[in-house]
Image (cartoon, rainbow over the protein chains, first blue to last red):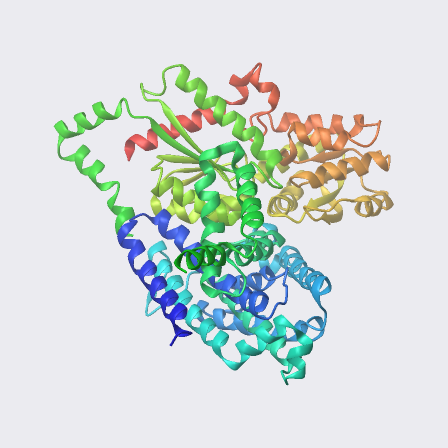
Length: 314
Length: 326
Protein backbone atom coordinates (compact mmCIF):
# COMPACT_ATOMS: atom_id res chain seq x y z
CA UNK A 1 0.00 0.00 0.00
CA UNK A 2 2.82 2.34 0.88
CA UNK A 3 4.40 1.82 -2.55
CA UNK A 4 1.16 2.50 -4.32
CA UNK A 5 0.67 5.96 -2.92
CA UNK A 6 2.84 8.12 -5.23
CA UNK A 7 1.56 6.22 -8.23
CA UNK A 8 -2.11 6.71 -7.48
CA UNK A 9 -1.45 10.28 -6.42
CA UNK A 10 0.33 11.12 -9.67
CA UNK A 11 -2.27 9.55 -11.90
CA UNK A 12 -5.10 11.18 -9.95
CA UNK A 13 -3.42 14.59 -10.11
CA UNK A 14 -2.84 14.14 -13.81
CA UNK A 15 -6.47 13.25 -14.45
CA UNK A 16 -7.58 16.31 -12.48
CA UNK A 17 -5.21 18.61 -14.40
CA UNK A 18 -6.23 17.20 -17.77
CA UNK A 19 -9.93 17.45 -16.91
CA UNK A 20 -9.89 20.90 -15.32
CA UNK A 21 -7.49 22.86 -17.51
CA UNK A 22 -10.02 23.48 -20.30
CA UNK A 23 -12.54 24.65 -17.70
CA UNK A 24 -10.18 27.08 -15.98
CA UNK A 25 -8.21 28.30 -18.99
CA UNK A 26 -10.54 28.83 -21.89
CA UNK A 27 -8.11 29.65 -24.62
CA UNK A 28 -6.71 27.67 -27.49
CA UNK A 29 -3.31 29.01 -26.67
CA UNK A 30 -3.26 27.45 -23.19
CA UNK A 31 -4.65 24.23 -24.58
CA UNK A 32 -1.93 24.25 -27.19
CA UNK A 33 0.79 24.70 -24.56
CA UNK A 34 -0.74 21.97 -22.40
CA UNK A 35 -0.90 19.67 -25.43
CA UNK A 36 2.82 20.23 -25.96
CA UNK A 37 3.46 19.39 -22.31
CA UNK A 38 1.44 16.17 -22.62
CA UNK A 39 3.18 15.15 -25.83
CA UNK A 40 6.71 15.83 -24.65
CA UNK A 41 5.82 14.49 -21.23
CA UNK A 42 5.15 11.15 -22.88
CA UNK A 43 8.55 11.17 -24.56
CA UNK A 44 10.20 12.28 -21.33
CA UNK A 45 8.60 9.43 -19.37
CA UNK A 46 9.98 6.96 -21.91
CA UNK A 47 13.42 8.50 -21.73
CA UNK A 48 13.26 8.49 -17.94
CA UNK A 49 12.60 4.75 -17.95
CA UNK A 50 15.83 4.38 -19.87
CA UNK A 51 17.91 7.01 -18.06
CA UNK A 52 16.44 7.25 -14.61
CA UNK A 53 15.68 3.59 -14.04
CA UNK A 54 18.23 1.72 -16.13
CA UNK A 55 20.87 4.46 -16.01
CA UNK A 56 21.53 4.38 -19.76
CA UNK A 57 22.05 7.76 -21.43
CA UNK A 58 20.46 8.56 -24.77
CA UNK A 59 21.39 11.74 -26.59
CA UNK A 60 19.48 10.83 -29.72
CA UNK A 61 16.02 10.18 -28.46
CA UNK A 62 14.51 12.78 -30.74
CA UNK A 63 15.45 10.40 -33.54
CA UNK A 64 12.58 8.19 -32.42
CA UNK A 65 10.31 11.22 -32.10
CA UNK A 66 11.24 11.98 -35.71
CA UNK A 67 10.46 8.46 -36.86
CA UNK A 68 7.05 8.59 -35.20
CA UNK A 69 6.31 12.04 -36.60
CA UNK A 70 7.33 11.22 -40.14
CA UNK A 71 5.50 7.89 -40.03
CA UNK A 72 2.17 9.71 -39.77
CA UNK A 73 3.35 12.15 -42.44
CA UNK A 74 4.75 9.72 -44.98
CA UNK A 75 2.45 6.71 -44.56
CA UNK A 76 -0.82 8.51 -45.46
CA UNK A 77 0.60 10.68 -48.25
CA UNK A 78 2.93 8.20 -49.96
CA UNK A 79 1.65 4.78 -48.98
CA UNK A 80 -2.05 5.41 -48.53
CA UNK A 81 -2.13 4.14 -44.96
CA UNK A 82 -4.60 6.09 -42.78
CA UNK A 83 -3.19 8.20 -39.94
CA UNK A 84 -4.22 5.99 -37.04
CA UNK A 85 -2.56 2.89 -38.46
CA UNK A 86 0.43 5.05 -39.27
CA UNK A 87 0.88 5.73 -35.55
CA UNK A 88 1.12 2.00 -34.94
CA UNK A 89 3.39 1.63 -37.94
CA UNK A 90 5.65 4.40 -36.62
CA UNK A 91 5.81 2.74 -33.21
CA UNK A 92 6.61 -0.55 -34.90
CA UNK A 93 9.37 0.97 -37.02
CA UNK A 94 10.79 2.73 -33.96
CA UNK A 95 10.74 -0.50 -31.97
CA UNK A 96 12.42 -2.36 -34.83
CA UNK A 97 15.08 0.33 -35.26
CA UNK A 98 15.64 0.41 -31.51
CA UNK A 99 15.96 -3.38 -31.52
CA UNK A 100 18.47 -3.36 -34.37
CA UNK A 101 20.69 -0.60 -33.04
CA UNK A 102 20.04 -1.43 -29.39
CA UNK A 103 21.74 -4.83 -29.56
CA UNK A 104 25.20 -3.50 -30.38
CA UNK A 105 25.18 -0.03 -28.81
CA UNK A 106 23.77 -1.00 -25.43
CA UNK A 107 26.98 -2.94 -24.88
CA UNK A 108 28.64 0.45 -24.69
CA UNK A 109 28.76 2.33 -21.42
CA UNK A 110 28.79 5.92 -20.23
CA UNK A 111 30.19 8.41 -22.71
CA UNK A 112 30.50 5.80 -25.46
CA UNK A 113 26.81 4.99 -25.27
CA UNK A 114 26.00 8.71 -25.24
CA UNK A 115 28.04 9.27 -28.41
CA UNK A 116 26.50 6.26 -30.17
CA UNK A 117 22.96 7.45 -29.46
CA UNK A 118 23.99 10.98 -30.43
CA UNK A 119 25.12 9.61 -33.77
CA UNK A 120 21.83 7.79 -34.22
CA UNK A 121 19.88 11.01 -33.61
CA UNK A 122 21.96 12.89 -36.15
CA UNK A 123 21.52 10.11 -38.70
CA UNK A 124 17.75 10.23 -38.46
CA UNK A 125 17.72 14.02 -38.73
CA UNK A 126 20.05 13.87 -41.76
CA UNK A 127 17.95 11.23 -43.44
CA UNK A 128 14.76 13.24 -42.92
CA UNK A 129 16.45 16.40 -44.23
CA UNK A 130 17.98 14.84 -47.32
CA UNK A 131 15.30 12.45 -48.55
CA UNK A 132 13.39 15.44 -49.81
CA UNK A 133 11.16 13.53 -52.21
CA UNK A 134 9.71 11.60 -49.27
CA UNK A 135 10.01 14.01 -46.39
CA UNK A 136 9.84 17.42 -48.05
CA UNK A 137 13.37 18.28 -46.98
CA UNK A 138 14.30 20.88 -44.34
CA UNK A 139 11.05 22.78 -44.78
CA UNK A 140 9.10 19.72 -43.79
CA UNK A 141 5.83 18.31 -44.97
CA UNK A 142 2.23 18.65 -44.00
CA UNK A 143 0.52 15.85 -42.13
CA UNK A 144 -3.03 14.90 -43.05
CA UNK A 145 -5.30 14.83 -40.00
CA UNK A 146 -6.75 11.43 -39.24
CA UNK A 147 -10.44 10.63 -39.48
CA UNK A 148 -11.94 8.93 -36.44
CA UNK A 149 -15.53 7.74 -36.63
CA UNK A 150 -16.15 9.89 -39.65
CA UNK A 151 -14.89 13.15 -38.17
CA UNK A 152 -11.60 14.74 -39.04
CA UNK A 153 -9.65 15.39 -35.86
CA UNK A 154 -8.12 18.81 -36.25
CA UNK A 155 -9.05 21.32 -33.57
CA UNK A 156 -6.77 22.19 -30.69
CA UNK A 157 -9.39 21.01 -28.22
CA UNK A 158 -9.72 17.57 -29.75
CA UNK A 159 -5.97 17.07 -29.71
CA UNK A 160 -5.84 18.33 -26.16
CA UNK A 161 -8.11 15.51 -25.01
CA UNK A 162 -6.37 12.87 -27.10
CA UNK A 163 -2.86 13.77 -25.94
CA UNK A 164 -4.03 14.15 -22.35
CA UNK A 165 -5.63 10.71 -22.44
CA UNK A 166 -2.57 9.10 -24.00
CA UNK A 167 -0.31 10.69 -21.40
CA UNK A 168 -2.45 9.32 -18.56
CA UNK A 169 -2.33 5.85 -20.12
CA UNK A 170 1.41 6.18 -20.71
CA UNK A 171 1.95 7.19 -17.11
CA UNK A 172 -0.02 4.23 -15.77
CA UNK A 173 1.90 1.81 -18.00
CA UNK A 174 5.22 3.39 -17.00
CA UNK A 175 4.35 2.96 -13.31
CA UNK A 176 3.44 -0.66 -13.96
CA UNK A 177 6.75 -1.24 -15.71
CA UNK A 178 8.63 0.46 -12.89
CA UNK A 179 7.02 -1.70 -10.21
CA UNK A 180 7.32 -4.93 -12.19
CA UNK A 181 10.26 -7.30 -12.04
CA UNK A 182 11.68 -5.48 -15.04
CA UNK A 183 11.62 -2.22 -13.10
CA UNK A 184 13.40 -3.77 -10.15
CA UNK A 185 15.96 -5.35 -12.45
CA UNK A 186 16.56 -2.00 -14.13
CA UNK A 187 17.14 -0.25 -10.83
CA UNK A 188 19.57 -2.98 -9.89
CA UNK A 189 21.45 -2.42 -13.16
CA UNK A 190 21.49 1.29 -12.47
CA UNK A 191 23.09 0.83 -9.06
CA UNK A 192 25.66 -1.72 -10.13
CA UNK A 193 25.75 -3.85 -13.22
CA UNK A 194 28.10 -6.36 -11.63
CA UNK A 195 25.92 -6.76 -8.56
CA UNK A 196 22.81 -7.12 -10.72
CA UNK A 197 24.54 -9.71 -12.84
CA UNK A 198 25.62 -11.63 -9.76
CA UNK A 199 22.08 -11.90 -8.45
CA UNK A 200 20.90 -13.27 -11.76
CA UNK A 201 19.60 -10.27 -13.74
CA UNK A 202 19.96 -10.71 -17.50
CA UNK A 203 21.51 -7.30 -18.05
CA UNK A 204 21.59 -7.27 -21.85
CA UNK A 205 17.98 -8.42 -22.12
CA UNK A 206 16.66 -5.88 -19.62
CA UNK A 207 18.54 -2.96 -21.14
CA UNK A 208 17.36 -3.99 -24.56
CA UNK A 209 13.76 -4.20 -23.39
CA UNK A 210 13.72 -0.76 -21.81
CA UNK A 211 15.46 0.78 -24.82
CA UNK A 212 12.74 -0.52 -27.12
CA UNK A 213 10.01 0.60 -24.72
CA UNK A 214 11.41 4.11 -24.46
CA UNK A 215 11.73 4.26 -28.25
CA UNK A 216 8.04 3.40 -28.59
CA UNK A 217 7.14 6.14 -26.08
CA UNK A 218 9.16 8.68 -28.07
CA UNK A 219 7.69 7.51 -31.34
CA UNK A 220 4.13 7.83 -30.02
CA UNK A 221 4.92 11.33 -28.80
CA UNK A 222 6.31 12.17 -32.24
CA UNK A 223 3.19 10.90 -33.99
CA UNK A 224 0.91 12.88 -31.68
CA UNK A 225 3.02 16.00 -32.13
CA UNK A 226 2.90 15.68 -35.90
CA UNK A 227 -0.84 15.01 -35.98
CA UNK A 228 -1.74 17.86 -33.67
CA UNK A 229 0.56 20.29 -35.50
CA UNK A 230 -0.41 19.29 -39.00
CA UNK A 231 3.06 20.17 -40.25
CA UNK A 232 6.48 18.75 -39.42
CA UNK A 233 10.07 19.72 -40.09
CA UNK A 234 13.16 17.61 -39.39
CA UNK A 235 14.53 20.14 -36.91
CA UNK A 236 11.37 20.46 -34.87
CA UNK A 237 11.02 16.69 -34.48
CA UNK A 238 14.32 14.84 -34.84
CA UNK A 239 16.81 17.68 -34.40
CA UNK A 240 19.69 17.41 -31.96
CA UNK A 241 18.33 20.30 -29.91
CA UNK A 242 15.10 18.37 -29.47
CA UNK A 243 17.12 15.47 -27.99
CA UNK A 244 18.82 17.86 -25.63
CA UNK A 245 15.45 19.33 -24.70
CA UNK A 246 14.10 15.86 -23.84
CA UNK A 247 17.20 15.20 -21.78
CA UNK A 248 16.73 18.52 -19.99
CA UNK A 249 13.12 17.66 -19.20
CA UNK A 250 14.14 14.37 -17.59
CA UNK A 251 17.17 15.66 -15.71
CA UNK A 252 15.52 18.89 -14.60
CA UNK A 253 12.46 17.08 -13.30
CA UNK A 254 14.49 14.41 -11.56
CA UNK A 255 15.79 11.05 -12.70
CA UNK A 256 13.99 7.89 -11.73
CA UNK A 257 10.60 9.42 -10.98
CA UNK A 258 7.77 9.37 -13.48
CA UNK A 259 5.86 12.27 -11.99
CA UNK A 260 8.95 14.47 -12.12
CA UNK A 261 9.40 13.81 -15.82
CA UNK A 262 6.02 15.38 -16.47
CA UNK A 263 6.79 18.32 -14.21
CA UNK A 264 10.22 18.73 -15.80
CA UNK A 265 8.54 18.81 -19.19
CA UNK A 266 6.07 21.40 -17.96
CA UNK A 267 8.95 23.61 -16.81
CA UNK A 268 10.88 23.28 -20.06
CA UNK A 269 7.82 23.94 -22.24
CA UNK A 270 6.44 26.78 -20.12
CA UNK A 271 9.65 28.69 -19.41
CA UNK A 272 10.16 30.12 -22.93
CA UNK A 273 6.50 31.16 -22.96
CA UNK A 274 6.74 32.89 -19.58
CA UNK A 275 10.08 34.47 -20.34
CA UNK A 276 8.93 36.32 -23.44
CA UNK A 277 8.39 39.31 -21.15
CA UNK A 278 12.15 39.70 -21.03
CA UNK A 279 12.30 40.15 -24.82
CA UNK A 280 15.96 40.39 -25.81
CA UNK A 281 17.15 38.82 -22.58
CA UNK A 282 14.90 35.78 -22.90
CA UNK A 283 17.70 33.33 -23.64
CA UNK A 284 19.92 34.84 -20.99
CA UNK A 285 17.26 34.33 -18.32
CA UNK A 286 16.44 30.86 -19.63
CA UNK A 287 20.07 29.85 -19.29
CA UNK A 288 20.26 31.38 -15.84
CA UNK A 289 17.20 29.49 -14.60
CA UNK A 290 18.61 26.23 -15.98
CA UNK A 291 21.98 26.81 -14.35
CA UNK A 292 20.47 27.70 -11.00
CA UNK A 293 18.33 24.57 -11.13
CA UNK A 294 21.34 22.39 -11.82
CA UNK A 295 23.54 24.05 -9.20
CA UNK A 296 20.93 24.33 -6.44
CA UNK A 297 18.89 21.22 -7.20
CA UNK A 298 21.27 18.66 -8.69
CA UNK A 299 18.86 15.82 -8.00
CA UNK A 300 16.12 17.50 -10.02
CA UNK A 301 13.34 19.89 -9.10
CA UNK A 302 10.81 17.38 -7.78
CA UNK A 303 13.08 15.19 -5.60
CA UNK A 304 14.66 18.27 -4.04
CA UNK A 305 11.33 19.82 -3.15
CA UNK A 306 10.00 16.50 -1.84
CA UNK A 307 13.05 16.10 0.38
CA UNK A 308 12.56 19.62 1.69
CA UNK A 309 8.97 18.88 2.60
CA UNK A 310 9.84 15.56 4.19
CA UNK A 311 12.71 17.16 6.10
CA UNK A 312 10.34 19.70 7.57
CA UNK A 313 7.76 17.10 8.51
CA UNK A 314 10.15 15.04 10.59
CA UNK B 1 -13.97 25.50 -32.58
CA UNK B 2 -16.89 27.17 -30.98
CA UNK B 3 -14.74 29.78 -29.37
CA UNK B 4 -12.91 30.55 -32.57
CA UNK B 5 -15.91 31.14 -34.71
CA UNK B 6 -17.74 32.77 -31.83
CA UNK B 7 -15.22 35.49 -31.31
CA UNK B 8 -15.71 37.75 -34.31
CA UNK B 9 -19.45 37.36 -34.19
CA UNK B 10 -20.32 40.11 -31.72
CA UNK B 11 -18.54 42.62 -33.94
CA UNK B 12 -20.47 41.54 -36.99
CA UNK B 13 -23.78 41.65 -35.20
CA UNK B 14 -22.91 45.03 -33.77
CA UNK B 15 -22.01 46.43 -37.15
CA UNK B 16 -24.93 44.98 -39.01
CA UNK B 17 -27.99 45.33 -36.85
CA UNK B 18 -27.36 47.96 -34.24
CA UNK B 19 -25.99 51.07 -35.87
CA UNK B 20 -25.96 52.97 -32.61
CA UNK B 21 -24.00 50.27 -30.90
CA UNK B 22 -21.69 50.06 -33.86
CA UNK B 23 -20.85 53.74 -33.75
CA UNK B 24 -20.23 53.42 -30.04
CA UNK B 25 -17.94 50.54 -30.77
CA UNK B 26 -15.85 52.51 -33.27
CA UNK B 27 -15.75 55.50 -30.98
CA UNK B 28 -14.43 53.37 -28.17
CA UNK B 29 -11.93 51.64 -30.37
CA UNK B 30 -10.48 54.91 -31.63
CA UNK B 31 -8.34 55.02 -28.52
CA UNK B 32 -7.60 51.33 -28.41
CA UNK B 33 -4.34 50.29 -30.00
CA UNK B 34 -4.38 48.07 -33.04
CA UNK B 35 -2.68 44.85 -32.14
CA UNK B 36 -0.36 43.35 -34.66
CA UNK B 37 1.66 40.21 -34.12
CA UNK B 38 4.96 39.02 -35.47
CA UNK B 39 6.72 35.70 -35.12
CA UNK B 40 10.23 35.91 -36.50
CA UNK B 41 13.25 33.63 -36.39
CA UNK B 42 15.39 36.26 -34.69
CA UNK B 43 17.78 33.63 -33.36
CA UNK B 44 18.87 30.41 -34.98
CA UNK B 45 20.00 29.63 -38.52
CA UNK B 46 17.58 32.03 -40.19
CA UNK B 47 18.55 34.99 -38.03
CA UNK B 48 20.23 36.76 -40.94
CA UNK B 49 16.76 37.11 -42.46
CA UNK B 50 14.79 37.88 -39.36
CA UNK B 51 17.02 40.47 -37.75
CA UNK B 52 16.51 43.09 -40.45
CA UNK B 53 12.84 42.16 -40.45
CA UNK B 54 12.61 42.73 -36.73
CA UNK B 55 14.40 46.08 -36.91
CA UNK B 56 12.20 47.11 -39.79
CA UNK B 57 8.92 46.24 -38.17
CA UNK B 58 9.92 47.92 -34.92
CA UNK B 59 10.95 51.02 -36.82
CA UNK B 60 7.74 51.02 -38.83
CA UNK B 61 5.57 50.76 -35.77
CA UNK B 62 7.51 53.54 -34.09
CA UNK B 63 7.11 55.80 -37.08
CA UNK B 64 3.44 55.14 -37.54
CA UNK B 65 2.79 55.71 -33.87
CA UNK B 66 4.90 58.88 -33.84
CA UNK B 67 2.81 60.27 -36.66
CA UNK B 68 -0.40 59.60 -34.78
CA UNK B 69 -1.12 56.00 -35.70
CA UNK B 70 -3.64 54.77 -38.23
CA UNK B 71 -6.96 56.59 -38.02
CA UNK B 72 -5.91 57.85 -34.63
CA UNK B 73 -5.22 54.38 -33.28
CA UNK B 74 -1.75 53.44 -32.18
CA UNK B 75 -0.22 50.16 -33.19
CA UNK B 76 0.79 47.70 -30.55
CA UNK B 77 3.32 45.14 -31.65
CA UNK B 78 3.62 41.65 -30.19
CA UNK B 79 6.91 40.20 -31.29
CA UNK B 80 8.05 36.64 -30.56
CA UNK B 81 11.18 34.79 -31.51
CA UNK B 82 10.72 31.22 -32.73
CA UNK B 83 14.45 30.53 -33.07
CA UNK B 84 13.81 29.01 -36.49
CA UNK B 85 11.86 26.17 -34.86
CA UNK B 86 8.63 25.43 -36.67
CA UNK B 87 7.11 23.95 -33.54
CA UNK B 88 7.53 27.02 -31.36
CA UNK B 89 6.51 29.24 -34.24
CA UNK B 90 3.19 27.50 -34.15
CA UNK B 91 2.83 27.88 -30.40
CA UNK B 92 3.54 31.59 -30.63
CA UNK B 93 1.11 31.91 -33.49
CA UNK B 94 -1.74 30.51 -31.42
CA UNK B 95 -0.59 32.71 -28.56
CA UNK B 96 -0.90 35.77 -30.80
CA UNK B 97 -4.41 34.82 -31.81
CA UNK B 98 -5.86 33.55 -28.54
CA UNK B 99 -3.89 35.48 -25.98
CA UNK B 100 -2.89 38.76 -27.56
CA UNK B 101 -5.90 38.90 -29.89
CA UNK B 102 -4.04 40.42 -32.80
CA UNK B 103 -5.93 41.53 -35.88
CA UNK B 104 -3.15 40.43 -38.21
CA UNK B 105 0.21 38.84 -38.17
CA UNK B 106 3.45 39.32 -40.04
CA UNK B 107 6.08 36.67 -39.90
CA UNK B 108 7.29 33.31 -40.77
CA UNK B 109 10.81 34.27 -41.72
CA UNK B 110 11.39 30.94 -43.42
CA UNK B 111 9.23 28.69 -45.51
CA UNK B 112 9.30 26.01 -42.82
CA UNK B 113 7.96 28.21 -40.03
CA UNK B 114 5.43 29.76 -42.39
CA UNK B 115 4.06 26.42 -43.47
CA UNK B 116 3.63 25.26 -39.90
CA UNK B 117 1.71 28.33 -38.74
CA UNK B 118 -0.51 28.48 -41.82
CA UNK B 119 -3.31 26.26 -40.47
CA UNK B 120 -3.57 28.34 -37.30
CA UNK B 121 -4.43 31.46 -39.24
CA UNK B 122 -6.63 29.68 -41.72
CA UNK B 123 -8.70 28.26 -38.88
CA UNK B 124 -8.84 31.51 -36.91
CA UNK B 125 -9.49 33.55 -40.06
CA UNK B 126 -6.88 36.11 -39.19
CA UNK B 127 -4.83 37.64 -42.00
CA UNK B 128 -1.28 36.40 -42.11
CA UNK B 129 1.46 38.07 -44.10
CA UNK B 130 4.36 35.73 -44.70
CA UNK B 131 7.86 36.73 -45.63
CA UNK B 132 8.88 33.38 -47.01
CA UNK B 133 10.02 33.20 -50.60
CA UNK B 134 8.74 29.86 -51.77
CA UNK B 135 5.71 29.52 -53.97
CA UNK B 136 4.08 26.72 -51.99
CA UNK B 137 3.09 29.23 -49.30
CA UNK B 138 0.41 30.81 -51.46
CA UNK B 139 -0.26 27.98 -53.87
CA UNK B 140 -2.96 26.72 -53.63
CA UNK B 141 -4.37 30.11 -52.77
CA UNK B 142 -5.52 30.45 -49.18
CA UNK B 143 -8.03 33.01 -48.09
CA UNK B 144 -6.15 34.43 -45.13
CA UNK B 145 -2.56 33.99 -46.20
CA UNK B 146 -0.55 36.53 -48.14
CA UNK B 147 3.08 36.98 -48.82
CA UNK B 148 5.20 39.99 -49.64
CA UNK B 149 8.32 38.75 -51.41
CA UNK B 150 7.90 38.11 -55.09
CA UNK B 151 7.70 34.47 -56.04
CA UNK B 152 10.55 32.35 -57.22
CA UNK B 153 9.26 32.36 -60.76
CA UNK B 154 9.58 36.12 -60.93
CA UNK B 155 13.13 35.96 -59.62
CA UNK B 156 14.05 33.28 -62.16
CA UNK B 157 12.55 35.27 -64.98
CA UNK B 158 14.49 38.38 -64.00
CA UNK B 159 17.75 36.44 -63.87
CA UNK B 160 17.04 34.81 -67.20
CA UNK B 161 16.16 38.10 -68.86
CA UNK B 162 19.53 39.41 -67.80
CA UNK B 163 21.25 36.22 -68.98
CA UNK B 164 19.64 36.55 -72.39
CA UNK B 165 20.71 40.17 -72.70
CA UNK B 166 24.26 39.10 -71.92
CA UNK B 167 23.95 36.18 -74.34
CA UNK B 168 24.76 33.59 -71.71
CA UNK B 169 22.47 30.77 -72.63
CA UNK B 170 24.13 27.68 -71.22
CA UNK B 171 23.90 27.73 -67.49
CA UNK B 172 24.67 25.53 -64.54
CA UNK B 173 22.14 25.39 -61.73
CA UNK B 174 23.66 24.99 -58.29
CA UNK B 175 20.69 24.91 -55.96
CA UNK B 176 20.06 24.44 -52.27
CA UNK B 177 18.16 21.40 -51.09
CA UNK B 178 16.11 23.49 -48.65
CA UNK B 179 12.55 24.36 -49.52
CA UNK B 180 13.45 27.75 -50.90
CA UNK B 181 16.25 26.48 -53.14
CA UNK B 182 14.21 23.51 -54.23
CA UNK B 183 11.17 25.56 -55.09
CA UNK B 184 13.19 28.16 -56.97
CA UNK B 185 15.12 25.46 -58.82
CA UNK B 186 11.86 23.90 -60.01
CA UNK B 187 10.54 27.26 -61.13
CA UNK B 188 13.79 28.06 -62.94
CA UNK B 189 13.73 24.73 -64.75
CA UNK B 190 10.12 25.40 -65.69
CA UNK B 191 10.68 28.84 -67.18
CA UNK B 192 14.08 28.17 -68.74
CA UNK B 193 12.76 27.01 -72.15
CA UNK B 194 10.82 30.27 -72.48
CA UNK B 195 14.09 32.15 -72.58
CA UNK B 196 15.91 29.56 -74.70
CA UNK B 197 18.14 28.90 -71.77
CA UNK B 198 19.71 25.49 -71.51
CA UNK B 199 20.55 24.01 -68.19
CA UNK B 200 23.63 22.04 -69.07
CA UNK B 201 24.62 21.02 -65.59
CA UNK B 202 23.03 20.70 -62.18
CA UNK B 203 24.47 20.53 -58.72
CA UNK B 204 22.94 20.85 -55.28
CA UNK B 205 24.10 21.79 -51.83
CA UNK B 206 22.68 21.26 -48.37
CA UNK B 207 21.59 24.33 -46.39
CA UNK B 208 24.32 23.68 -43.84
CA UNK B 209 27.15 22.56 -46.07
CA UNK B 210 30.36 24.32 -45.16
CA UNK B 211 32.26 23.66 -48.37
CA UNK B 212 31.07 23.64 -51.97
CA UNK B 213 34.29 23.35 -53.89
CA UNK B 214 33.24 19.89 -55.10
CA UNK B 215 30.14 21.22 -56.79
CA UNK B 216 32.04 24.13 -58.29
CA UNK B 217 34.80 21.84 -59.53
CA UNK B 218 32.19 19.79 -61.33
CA UNK B 219 30.81 22.96 -62.86
CA UNK B 220 34.26 24.11 -63.94
CA UNK B 221 34.89 20.83 -65.71
CA UNK B 222 31.95 21.55 -67.99
CA UNK B 223 33.39 23.99 -70.48
CA UNK B 224 30.06 24.89 -72.09
CA UNK B 225 28.74 26.48 -68.90
CA UNK B 226 28.49 30.22 -69.44
CA UNK B 227 26.91 31.26 -66.17
CA UNK B 228 26.13 29.82 -62.77
CA UNK B 229 22.73 30.35 -61.23
CA UNK B 230 22.53 29.53 -57.55
CA UNK B 231 19.05 29.50 -56.04
CA UNK B 232 19.35 29.13 -52.31
CA UNK B 233 18.88 30.85 -49.03
CA UNK B 234 20.89 31.37 -45.90
CA UNK B 235 24.57 30.95 -45.32
CA UNK B 236 25.14 28.24 -47.90
CA UNK B 237 25.04 30.50 -50.99
CA UNK B 238 27.49 32.80 -49.22
CA UNK B 239 29.87 29.90 -48.79
CA UNK B 240 29.32 29.03 -52.42
CA UNK B 241 30.28 32.57 -53.35
CA UNK B 242 33.34 32.37 -51.15
CA UNK B 243 34.47 29.08 -52.71
CA UNK B 244 33.77 30.61 -56.09
CA UNK B 245 36.31 33.32 -55.35
CA UNK B 246 38.79 30.92 -53.87
CA UNK B 247 38.65 28.80 -57.01
CA UNK B 248 39.05 31.89 -59.16
CA UNK B 249 36.16 31.01 -61.44
CA UNK B 250 35.49 33.32 -64.35
CA UNK B 251 31.95 32.35 -65.24
CA UNK B 252 29.44 34.97 -64.07
CA UNK B 253 27.42 33.92 -61.06
CA UNK B 254 23.86 34.76 -60.13
CA UNK B 255 22.43 34.24 -56.72
CA UNK B 256 18.83 34.46 -55.60
CA UNK B 257 16.81 37.14 -53.84
CA UNK B 258 16.95 34.93 -50.76
CA UNK B 259 20.43 36.14 -49.92
CA UNK B 260 20.13 39.85 -50.69
CA UNK B 261 21.28 41.10 -47.32
CA UNK B 262 24.32 42.73 -45.88
CA UNK B 263 25.17 39.62 -43.94
CA UNK B 264 25.55 37.70 -47.16
CA UNK B 265 28.14 40.11 -48.51
CA UNK B 266 30.02 39.96 -45.24
CA UNK B 267 30.06 36.19 -45.20
CA UNK B 268 31.08 35.90 -48.82
CA UNK B 269 33.78 38.51 -48.58
CA UNK B 270 35.39 36.99 -45.55
CA UNK B 271 37.95 34.84 -47.38
CA UNK B 272 39.59 36.27 -50.46
CA UNK B 273 40.73 39.54 -51.94
CA UNK B 274 39.17 39.20 -55.39
CA UNK B 275 35.76 39.69 -53.90
CA UNK B 276 34.71 41.88 -56.77
CA UNK B 277 33.42 39.32 -59.11
CA UNK B 278 30.74 37.78 -56.94
CA UNK B 279 29.86 41.11 -55.43
CA UNK B 280 29.34 42.65 -58.85
CA UNK B 281 27.21 39.65 -59.72
CA UNK B 282 25.49 40.23 -56.45
CA UNK B 283 24.65 43.76 -57.46
CA UNK B 284 22.44 42.25 -60.10
CA UNK B 285 20.80 40.25 -57.40
CA UNK B 286 20.49 43.40 -55.36
CA UNK B 287 18.74 45.20 -58.15
CA UNK B 288 16.34 42.32 -58.58
CA UNK B 289 15.42 42.49 -54.99
CA UNK B 290 14.98 46.24 -54.76
CA UNK B 291 11.41 46.16 -53.46
CA UNK B 292 11.90 43.05 -51.37
CA UNK B 293 10.98 43.77 -47.76
CA UNK B 294 13.07 40.81 -46.70
CA UNK B 295 16.29 42.63 -47.18
CA UNK B 296 15.48 45.79 -45.26
CA UNK B 297 19.15 46.63 -44.86
CA UNK B 298 20.69 48.48 -42.00
CA UNK B 299 21.36 51.46 -44.24
CA UNK B 300 17.68 52.02 -44.65
CA UNK B 301 17.45 53.38 -41.14
CA UNK B 302 19.34 56.48 -42.11
CA UNK B 303 18.09 57.22 -45.59
CA UNK B 304 15.72 56.26 -48.36
CA UNK B 305 13.54 53.93 -46.36
CA UNK B 306 10.37 55.17 -47.99
CA UNK B 307 11.01 53.53 -51.33
CA UNK B 308 12.31 50.32 -49.87
CA UNK B 309 9.72 49.80 -47.20
CA UNK B 310 6.86 50.74 -49.39
CA UNK B 311 5.58 47.21 -49.28
CA UNK B 312 5.40 46.70 -45.54
CA UNK B 313 3.57 50.02 -45.33
CA UNK B 314 0.96 48.87 -47.77
CA UNK B 315 0.92 45.60 -45.88
CA UNK B 316 -0.03 47.49 -42.78
CA UNK B 317 -2.65 49.33 -44.76
CA UNK B 318 -4.06 46.01 -45.87
CA UNK B 319 -4.10 44.75 -42.33
CA UNK B 320 -5.95 47.81 -41.22
CA UNK B 321 -8.51 47.28 -43.88
CA UNK B 322 -8.96 43.64 -42.97
CA UNK B 323 -9.08 44.50 -39.30
CA UNK B 324 -11.95 46.89 -39.87
CA UNK B 325 -13.87 44.47 -42.04
CA UNK B 326 -13.66 41.97 -39.20
